[in-house]
Image (cartoon, rainbow, N blue to C red):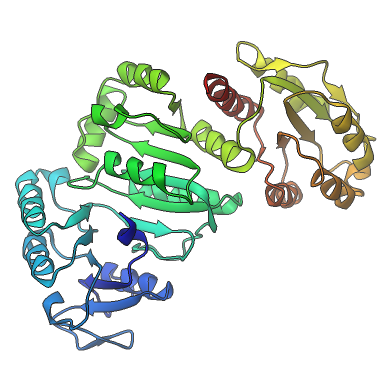
Length: 416
């Protein structure tokens, strides 16, 4: 799988000279990573200052990876040519296969690939992203991509993947690798999970799936795995089959298997992202006792409401520092806490705290405790949440999401 993320050379088959075309944007994105790139298009002699080749077989050098963005019917011939060229890895961006009823076309493409020992990601996908070197096969532009980090993302949906990558980037969470694998005609979640479980850069694995096979669970998971599964209802299953040709399994069975195997099954996107964020930034807590420290009661009261009927246990009463609290008041309360988890609730707009924020961040950075934060507000609050992210403190603007996500993390940690 490594060559999908760290290729020495790439052929973009279906490269275009027209800005806005899929083949143009893929070529531009690949070039931006500094990877040696060969455009392939029989109608062009040069694209973006690079010599353009009629076919992949006309390239004189070795090619590790082919990125294919041509009409689905042409993909069989293209894969055949890749095989004759000796290319062993291909990302098929093209749609028009099983998801539109052309399963025969998809099977034929895979059969030829297997004859030549080619591994395929896709079709009907946006491909891969490597946080450490910036390499990506996307045809999107103006994307906000996250820096290198410890979370691997696997998704059948390219649209969901784009949203998740930008959400990670906005909240300062780094990504090790990203894969949108679409119809999973060849490479599937089993291949990918085995790779990421052994990948040194990956500590957390976050997955969006529409269908998932039994074989996936025939292993022990040495790293936290968080799954958001779609296609739970009859309507959702039909939508999934139209999207990637997926055959969704019964959700109750899926949840039960996840529990048995120690996999975190998230109920919705907010919880999925919240769990990933907490583990990526803070790791796992040592216990379930939580202290809440606040300078404004409202959000903390709501948080307490949601703590009931969870694995979380309040270590004591909420520590309400009131609106006159400064950084030193927070630090004193933090130092007195004996809890496993500290939920810091902030009204950043209160003047005494706002005046002492530099001290707050400086002192919090010195303390090795399991923190999460809760803060609600506009642009000023968002600026402070970014500063918390720089300290690897995950922050939330909704008490329900904060507690629900934290509870999933605690459940997982207690099982481990």
